[in-house]
Length: 205
Image 1: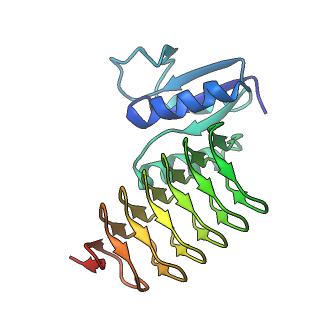
Image 2 (image 1 turned 90 degrees about the horizontal axis):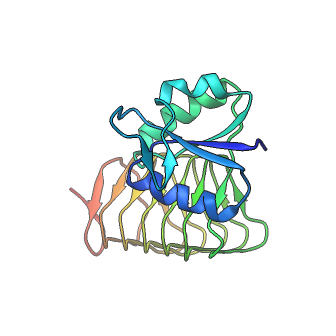
Image 3 (image 1 turned 135 degrees about the vertical axis):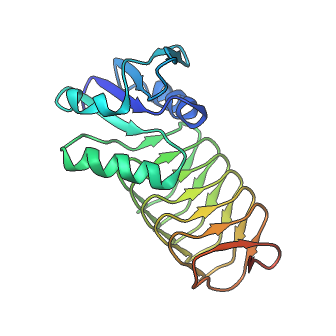
């Protein structure tokens, strides 16, 4: 771990990520990189350059991609990893994480989250405020689990999927990569085709 953490992305999600990083109290210095050149600070932290400037700091900084969009987050993190960047996991102090839970690099866990035992969460994921992830889940890379989502046991969520606020997934369900589950939707059977799913039970639109 390095003394400085650079957060790439200083907008809404970036602010939440910065708040968590500050609470973790592991870095002497925290700053942002953001492509909005008019932005000079966020959350009281300086914006010291653009995202492309990250590679100037590879040797002396940890990095975290604080961008909400899954595909953008993936693109930036993959470039950082290829360059040998150090990418931590950020976990708010007010979470419950069970035994034998794995969290991949670049994943952030927001306040009020519960992740039960034997769950594996990939890299670059967002486990957002108040979400619950039950036992033996497999969450692949660059998934966004929105606030208040509930996943029952033995759920698999494919790479790059987005689960909208308050959605629910029953036990033993598989959700294919790169699909979207709408706000409040309830998934009770496997989702095998990419697309957007809404309603109770969730259906493709």
